[in-house]
Image (cartoon, rainbow, N blue to C red; front, side, top):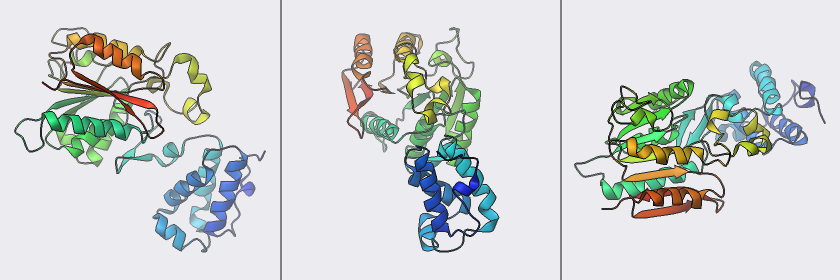
Length: 315
């Protein structure tokens, strides 16, 4: 196995852009890095500051000497296991770029299906051309990917994003500003639904008391604690444990949110959760036991995994 501190293993000043791409891809592949070519191309576009079409056009050109030192450092970081999203500080979600930092979970493509399910269900209850608009709360917002996307897709909605991590909230605020949604959003620090409890309840946030939540959406931590050690190193060693650890069986956040529902000013007409493999039936049962929603559906992701549960009170 190559020593990833030795730049000669993957770069020489005489390389063309193509050679730099191919050598770095081979180098990462030998180290067992997943999707090496995809990772290298993302890093290449980032360091050169160009679009993919320009990269392909200029593949035969000499690698720019002024970017060589940065390129070597980025490949070293990738070789050490750091997720490419943290290296470049960005990930795309629902057609928009979102700033990511080690304080936030990296947005995943399957979460876009949760956004689509919420938009579809809410549009039936609050038509976009109607006079009423829902109040939406995104619990455990992280980068703000869900909340900012909903606010951007439906500018008339009132969206509040919460997170236990103040550092994550700062990232979410920055992403809201980046997508011109900050003026239509609120941000609250706190644990799950506690900040939205009725006035005087333990944990209620002064600026969020008595919020009447119409739509509750959340992608909480759902990895069973004993499974954390077996996660891919990129996830286990770099993404925040606070956003991963769902307790003994991964269901603690869902149980706690369901237990907290009676403390809200009203029960949401829509509750939408993302969850882990094998958890859908248990989470759906938790919501059925509340007896508030007449339509509870399970949504599969692109791999056929039961990934989301959405509960709707249609009447």
